[in-house]
Length: 153
Image (cartoon, rainbow, N blue to C red):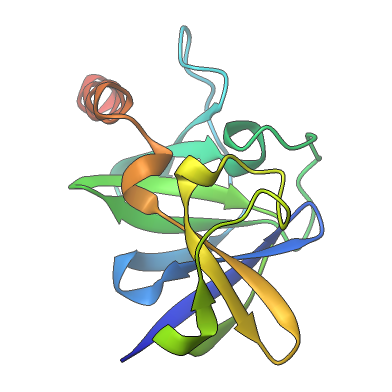
């Protein structure tokens, strides 16, 4: 079996998410801070009239912070029924990955908590860390983001 993966970079490492979960890729735009939001929630943005919570994956994964630049993108995904924007350093490509290319997560390959990862894809001598969107946010955090969306709508 083969999947297509949207590849993005964070802190010099390549990450990927299943293209079926990606609703769009947006250039960096204004993000409004929200009081009392968790530290990894950058804020909310207006996406064609829809309030989209934006999470900073660097903060969520415990990576060093970075200022947004012209390559920064918001990857619009659906996580267990909650629509969220993920702030990433850059989106680089879409790749086809076969099951044979994927190995279980290893703490030796990345500093990111393996709870957030479904596996490591080896593609042409490169390693792509596959993100488990279901585990990026806990059920409670998903509920909080849904409430945040409704409060701001």
